[in-house]
Structures are given as C-alpha cells and as structure tokens.
Length: 275
Image: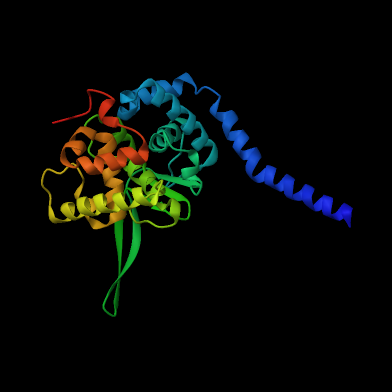
C-alpha cells in the first residue's frame, strides 16, 4: 500500500514538472538566447514602431518575440508560403503588446493563420424568419479558441508606415488580450476591482462619445463604435501608433491604456505625431 502511494506521488510530481516547470524553464532558456542580428535589421527596416522603441523596450520585445515564436504554430493559407522573416514581423507586434506584461497573456493562443491578402468568410444573418447568406471580406480575426487570422499584404504595409492610423496585427493581438478571461468585452484582465471599475467608467464614456461622433477627426477609428471589444482593439492601435493625439483627445482613456500596458508610447520618439 505504501509503495502504491509513493508511486502515485511520484507520478503526480513528474506530471507537474512535465506540464508546468519544464515548459517554463524551456521558455526562460529561450529568452536568454540573443536574437539574430538579421531579425533586428529586418525589424528596423520593416516595423516603424520598432524604430521608436527605447533600447530596454526593444530588449524585452526580443525576449517575448522569441517565446511567442516557440509557443505558437504559424500556417500560410491560400497558397501563401510563410518564411521566417514573416513570422518574426508578426511575432514582434504580439510581443510589443505584452512588453511589460507576460507571455502567459497569450497562453490560449495556439495558431496564427496568414492569408496573402483580404480573405472572404461566409456569414449567415437572420432577418426575421429569413436567413441570408453572404460573403464578407476580412483582414483579420481573433478567436477565443486560440486562433488568430491575418492578411499579410495589409500587415506588412501598415507595419512599415510611420503615419499609418491602423495596424491589423496590433488590432487582432489586442483582441487576444481582451479574450484572456473568456469574454470579448473590451476589458482585459485588470489588477483590481477598483481599477476595473475605473476602466469601465472611462471606456464606457469614451465609447459612447465615439458612437455619437460619425467620422470626424477622432484618432480612434469609427469601427470602434460597433462594440466594446472593437473599441478596445482600435483604441490600442491609436495608443501605439499616435499616442500624442490619443492623449490630447482622450486623456483618461490614454491613462487607462498606459496603466494596463505599463508603457507610455508618447515618450518614445519625436516621430510620433502630437498635433
């Protein structure tokens, strides 16, 4: 009986090590390996946001990028052959969002599917008793089941543009952060109930203002008016791409995002627009 109990304990300990300790040590060892210089040169050339980052922020991005490349499977779709540089550029955007957080925020993310360009998805909508099928063109998607979908031509074009007001990679990775707690509601995991209540107040007010302002000069894309989840994703884009404008137009919203991401992009570079 004693031998059986000891054997059971040994099995439990081994399983715990194999499932939790070993993967964590593997990721920690990966993080200590310097990224190849050609990756750094590529990001300098192809990722406008990377060129703005302070050195210490770049170093953390390298660490999280390597971990993300190890943890997630990448698949080319519709005949697209994915190369290592393509994976690096995608992973760098995901790593930027968790720069001061943890790779654990992407623990649900299992696969990234990349199409050459916009792809079509069949949707069914109900109009009373009648169902309508129609195709919809998309540039990206994020699923709570651990799947992220991206259109490569849009991603690479937006990534290189210093003045872009949109970034499909940041947008879809932001959805993944929103979905960590199982709900796609515009509220990622927050540190406390007090912070969550403040977040709710600030985001609700800002979202309502965006819904009432059609077009206009808001730095927050009007697509954010469609739902709280989309509002968080496009607000994240604005926070990283044009932090000066977001801080000017929505200072409380900017502060909330800076508190969550633990970053202040407005201080990164004079390349960031503030007018």
